[in-house]
Every structure is written in structure tokens, then in C-alpha cells.
Image 1 (spheres, protein in one colour):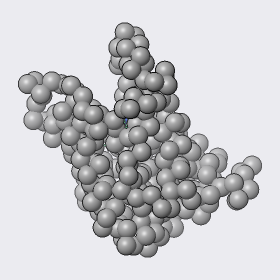
Image 2 (cartoon, protein in one colour; image 1 turned 60 degrees about the vertical axis):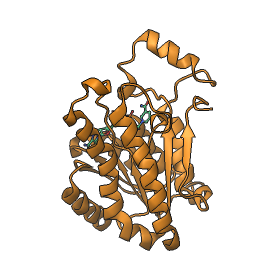
Image 3 (cartoon, rainbow, N blue to C red; image 1 turned 30 degrees about the horizontal axis):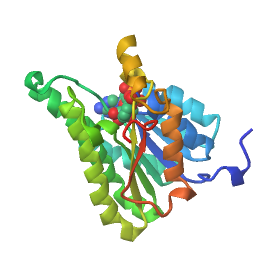
Image 4 (cartoon, rainbow, N blue to C red; image 1 turned 180 degrees about the vertical axis):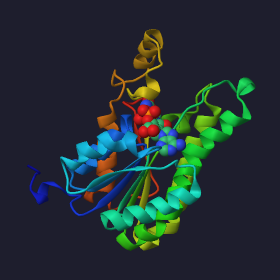
Length: 252
Ligand SMILES: NC(=O)c1ccc[n+]([C@@H]2O[C@H](COP(=O)([O-])OP(=O)(O)OC[C@H]3O[C@@H](n4cnc5c(N)ncnc54)[C@H](O)[C@@H]3O)[C@@H](O)[C@H]2O)c1
């Protein structure tokens, strides 16, 4: 049985989460659903987001899985229309889909650079552009998932760092543009989080990483989801253009 409405601050809101098939995006979708929001769970193919959508359905009134390549401007515009029709509007946009193609600059191919920018940065721009009108109508919220790597840089990730730093600039510009219409646009910048993206780290690299984190552990997807829920909810009403770093103190 779902919790009473007073404990579900996002009741009646519609949230769209990209990259919702696994990891951080899945945790965000489930957390927002537990807070009462209807969920549009986006992955490259709808089938991949089906499990997340069904977890959300058990917690809230409406949840759908949709397939969409976030770098495809036309498809994104069509999808945003479809979500509004099927779920009844749009209040919260979470640009979470992201990829890595790590390589030292000297060896990085043009394709590796372009692909990471296309998904991580242009993908978010595509959704922001398509969703800005409905978000102005709902006085909605946008949360863009960047990374501490976009704040600090990281050897071997010139493409990824550029895309994630770009997201912070994009957020600040759009926050200024949409503030007059009551839309808050912020960044959550995770540190290292245990997901498929970080699964490739060997034990030695993982231990070294943990040593650099004052709180002494990698983050979990739920740590990031909690920050997103805060910014999407009543507590985030007077915060815009900011980067909330969720990294166990790594960046201090
Ligand atoms: N895991 C970490 O340590 C960490 C740290 C900082 C930031 N982040 C960021 O958090 C976000 C989620 O990371 P994660 O670790 O859960 O990653 P993940 O690889 O586990 O999941 C990524 C999600 O994005 C989707 N996706 C990828 N390319 C897509 C595309 N072109 N179109 C649509 N969907 C696409 C995938 O299907 C998947 O659902 C990413 O933006 C990542 O850069 C992760």
C-alpha cells in the first residue's frame, strides 16, 4: 500500500529520468516514485527500462518505460510530447544518461570524443530544449547529473570531463534563462559510485580510491538519488544554478 499523500511530496508530479535502466538512474526513478511522482523511465530501448518502470509502478500511480537515444534531437522532442500526453504533463526532468570512452588524450579518437559529448552533453541539451515549455508551464525542476570529474578533471577522461563540465555551464545558463518562469535547474555531481560504470575498477584501484574519500567508502546509487529527490522536492524551491557535489568529501 502506498504511503499517505502528506509523506509523498511529489504526489501528482510527472518525472522523466534518462538512463533509468540501471545504476544511478534506476535508483533515482525508484526514489522519485516512492515520493509519489509518476515516472517516465527512459533507456536506449524501452525493454531495458521495463524492470525500473515496474518497480516504480508498485510505488506510484503511473510509470512507463520508453526507448530513446538521448543524442537524437528529433526523437527526444517526440518523446517529450508523448510523455506529456500519456502521463499528463512534465514537472521534473533528470538528465542522467551518460557514457565513458576513457583514453589518454594522445590516444583518444575523434569518435570517442564526439560520442561522449553527444550523449552526455548534447543529450541533456536535447531534453532541456524539448522540455523547457512544459517545465515553464509547471514551474518545474531540472537536475542534470554531472560528475566530480567535471569539477576536478581526471587523467584519461578528457572527453568525459569536458562533457560533465559542460553540463555545469549549461545548467547555469539555463537556470538564468528559466528562473523568471519559476523553473529551478541544478546539477548533482556524484563522486565514485558503485554501478556498472565503475565495475571495471580492479581491487587495487578501488582501495586507492577509497583512501581518497574522507567518508571512507564509495557512494551507492541511493546516495545520489537522495540528493536528486531533495532538489526535486519542496526543499529545492529556492535553489537554482547550483552544483551539489555528492562524493563523500573527495573534493574538499
Ligand atoms: N558511477 C559513477 O561512479 C558515476 C560518478 C559520477 C557521475 N556518474 C554519472 O551518473 C550517470 C549514471 O551513471 P551510472 O554509473 O548509473 O551508469 P550506467 O552505465 O550504470 O548507466 C547509464 C545509463 O545511461 C543509459 N544510456 C547510455 N547511453 C545512452 C543513450 N545514448 N541514450 C539513452 N540512454 C543511454 C544506459 O542505458 C544506462 O541506463 C552518468 O551520467 C554518469 O556519468 C556516475
